[in-house]
Length: 426
Ligand code: AMO
Image (cartoon, rainbow, N blue to C red; front, side, top):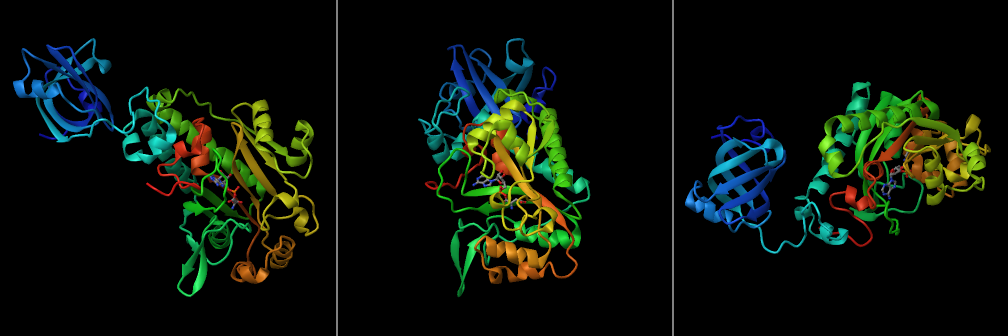
């Protein structure tokens, strides 16, 4: 007999036979009647053993099932007003495929209070919980629809290298490694590569891991994360902010459509956000922030509170607050304002980007101003000497976005196996 998934079993008629596989979520023993809640990737269903009717061995097994054990159950579907979902299974045969150890190192029930570090130490088991599953099912919809939105709009997906020869963000937070006789680094972003490909193929998109050796220990930073990036030729900061607004609206709409139950599990109702566009100067004035400084986490919160559950684009940032590769207003090395922006959503920065410098001489000047050596960026600078048009792009962190959207206290909830200052295993 072919396997039936729980969701399918819940749609079968009274009397139909099924073969289910999954895990023991819960059991209840009322002596003459024994219940087992079976779960698989599609849902949960009640198995009801009755002493007077159920096969003796099967009824006996129901007495002593260890939670989270993998089992196979064949039986008959029965309509039931009391059972969740309106159906239960009267078992013919129960086979334990893999028994779970007892006690479990993590409580994976719906009322679990196990603390995050212990859950992460035992992530393999934590993934049996409804809440963790809801987060990663939604994350899968985020990345899939991110890709879909852009590919459907004519973008080309590309894969940048992860081992690089020099810094791509101009900062110091690089992981160094030996690469034969040379020093190499783990990529901090696909920045330089996406620019080079966009200058030839126009509209490009990627989802790629990045590594940042920052020693911070916060609830919104990881040392390994996934960035969802785009880059577009013949574009400026305004046109690509519109792309970000479009993709966020699309992803939220798809989540609302496909994850009703998961959102319920997480206690969330998602509003498809509107977008507000304000310059950095306007924001400073509006919120009494010292012009020239970065926005503090508290500033980001204050700004978002005013535009509740909407996206706030803060554009035209000052030069000293942006990377060396962000275009200066008017293509002027002395300009105080750039074509760079940040996107804030539900209290945090979810994305940053802008128009890039496509003029080699201006790039060399800006590198020097930032204390970097243009020699280290030779191949990158040279790539703009042969017909490189103005171009712009941004990056949105997959885990940061998941955390923000799902209102998770800690970004580590939004990554399967976090890499942070203290955590390298599992
Ligand atoms: P930035 O450094 O702002 O920009 O990163 C882009 C987005 O990536 C996410 N992010 C992080 N998520 C988790 N942990 C971290 N340590 C972390 N750092 C960043 C955030 C952030 O908004 N190359 C530019 C983008 C561009 O101009 O295209 C860049 O990397 O969501």
